[in-house]
Length: 256
Image (cartoon, rainbow, N blue to C red):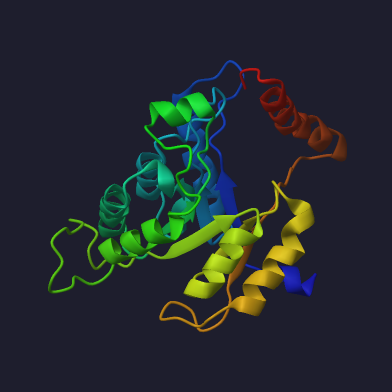
């Protein structure tokens, strides 16, 4: 228990739309949750990028991050994560450079490779089916360049964004991002809500292969876990059926 008391806690919010509710109500709920987490001393409040899912309202992730950051004062706000292959790195650098300029020292940029959508939505976003498979490290390097200090021969710049050095996190539910984060000396967040059985192996890969960088001198990892809080065990079990039903609907191909 003493170790848990010393552990930094954060919130990952999918911005769910309640049955019979609206996206507007969801955005109000996001602000309420972020403010509550801030009062409790939580470290971060992150939002995830998803598209074409009827029950999730966080598609315009950077816009919603700005909304939440504007209604809080101390908690770090960021993405868990932005799916980088869905976007040109320059655009993400401009968006998060703008957020960092508006809310200095409070913005995180967590990055993933998955589309956050189905095949039809990928095509609507003009994303290649192979995006992120082989080119993710190159995309990450390009993004880092746009957020870093300007170089003398640099023709394309992120304005704003250049020089903001928004903290980057690599997200994943496999060994790929764990090893890439280790090689680049970046912080790593493992999505144990998707692959709980691989958690310890991913953390081992990250820690064993970590190379110190200008960002980190030693490994720094975060773990995503699903948590249900309620006034009783019975109510918690009832609330948990919402998440269970969402995954069942996704498996069955039904609207969520």
